Length: 79
Image 1 (cartoon, one colour):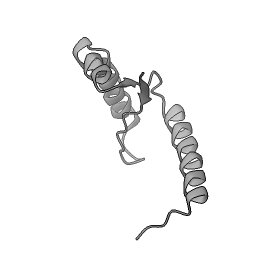
Image 2: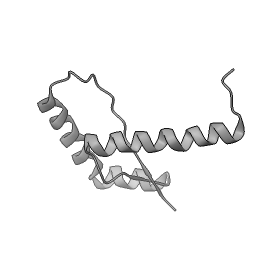
Image 3: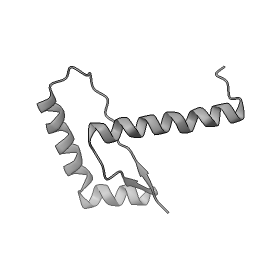
Image 4: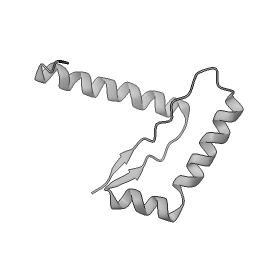
């Protein structure tokens, strides 16, 4: 069984959009290489198919909601 995984590269908001697009394109090209795909499969993961800023922002929002619920239900606290 595999799960999608988000490759997260965080950069400053003011970073030039053309450079962000180039970086994104290179990362996506690398993720399509057979050896890279095989590595992800070997560790039980699958690269997330989407790569837009909007998709990633939505992913983070969903993740916050999910983990907030876990914290609420388990009364988890930071030491």
